[in-house]
Image (cartoon, rainbow, N blue to C red; front, top):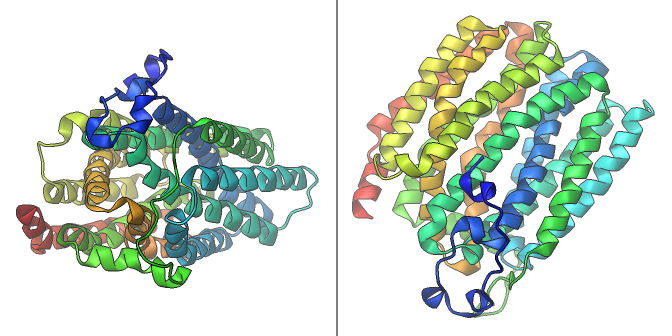
Length: 427
């Protein structure tokens, strides 16, 4: 755990911190920032619930159908829906109160997951029902995320953004560490149990989000509002006109495609090989240890390497370690090499999102954030389907090797394309 949660001294934040302009506010340490603690704590619980679902959805579909292809197709379908919703979700984050948006998203997901758990208990669900619930869950997350990210610069000072985002990465990897292990264990107890935990986690996140204080309304626009879809593409145009972000999105899609496929191959590949759900969860948790340690170390690593060098280190280590994992499949020992690239990922993400938030006007943070995620993760929607096909038609080792090859191509691009280095030099 990061240090700001180890010291939960609840000294009240001075009222002037919320009323003074940012340039005149005293800088409150993250561990004493009440709003940041509430946002962080609620999202630990929400992310934990989401991680339960990441493992539970494909395991439930596999139990219902016995098909890795259907399990992969459902995951791809949810990703495609998220892709279609992401740009307008960013525009909504720049129109609606960001705290209210978070509360509503968590409330809807809490109710839907609770009802779904009852259906699983009653043996009244099919894989089509699982698909619908997974889509609702994913859309809720897609709408929630830009609001929570856009609210971050309102909660912390500009000089704290790298540390705050590193803490956010630690939160995600902590959930990724404990969620799969817990999800596998709970699924072994009963197929409905992970979804009960998911519903409870969304309820806890709803509570902490509602307790945050301050003004979370996006700033008013200078002119009249245009249509939602027209405004949705403003973020894409803003990224294209920023040299640094433009250079990042040239390389990011293939990287995210590979890492998404790797994690899905871990789930389906081990299960297809006869590994129990609880061991699969522990394997994923072991991989996430690398990410959690990397998030803790990120503040010390930042500044030692440029973003372009971090991309090379991430893709090259990912290629090598994923190739090793291909030879180890379907052994749970794949967690050891796969933890290495996940150690570097939090630092790269913290550097990227800090640069993004600093360069983006407050009135456009939702749109620019989701536009970046849209472009960077769009190709990853195909990863689960490709992983399922390769596992069923060839083997899990071939699937893992294919994603190692994708990271190899990413490494070549990172070394040969000069756009990112030029953008850094210009900045």
